[in-house]
Length: 402
Image (tube, rainbow, N blue to C red):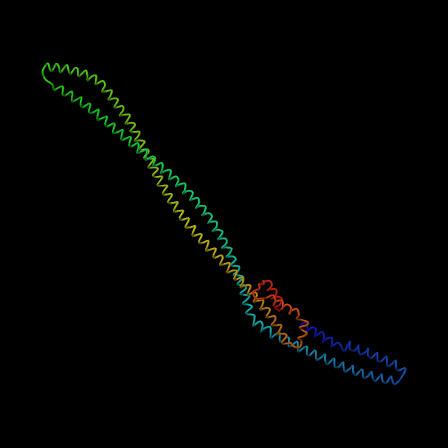
């Protein structure tokens, strides 16, 4: 368009040339010739005639040249109009064809870029959610490890208490066995003493009955009476010692019975303590089994959480790989878009040059050097595998899409 304006300005200046500049040039030449003729007329009439004839020829030549210039200007104006029409036709013909040829691909590429950016945003959100879930699982892992250590310490203390209770039970069993043996020996000794006393009482009663069945003679009776009196006196003496022995035996039996009852009560207390310790041991075993079961459950849950943690880490790495692959694909699509933009520009440029061979030199020299430099720079910058940013691609598209 700048070239057309230049040609239009040139045609306008050519149209104004006969009225202004060309008439001025002819007038100056005519004035110079007329001055020379008038100056020479004073000297020689022949010179005046020859000067007039030369002036007429010069005027004819100038008029012919002026007519040629005017005709050339009209031809250039017609040619300029034809070139304008051809340029408009080429613009109307090439622009829709380029848009029809590359428009759907560019639209699909833009839609694909938008989809990839949306997917990238969604992946970033998913990655952030996975990182939050991973941090929560790590906190739960630390809490479960702390609970497991506490449960292990509790189990160790319970095992220690169970060992101490078992040792105390063994000691109490040994002491109870000793007391039972002592009680049995005391019982045997008491039974022996009681049987001995009963034997003594029975022997004394038999002796009394034997003496009553002695002879019935008077002498015998007197002797018997005397003997009985003597025996009676002896029995009185022995009777005084027997009650004291019996009282001693009864007192000893009472004391032994009290000791035996105290021992029995102590044995019963020990039995109750043993029973309570048995109950405590059973409850400790039950709590130990429950804690072991809880520990196994915690270990199983811990293993499941470790497996879930590993699965989340694997999923996170796969998401990172997918995200990097999508980013590479996105950059490749941006590079393809840049290459297509450059190809469209080069296609327009070459098509414009191929359809306008007449003004090829003027366009190359006046309009397109900057665009040629931009195209060459874009071709140098956009190489296969080279990463370009979206802002640079948008700037290039906005500056060179017209």
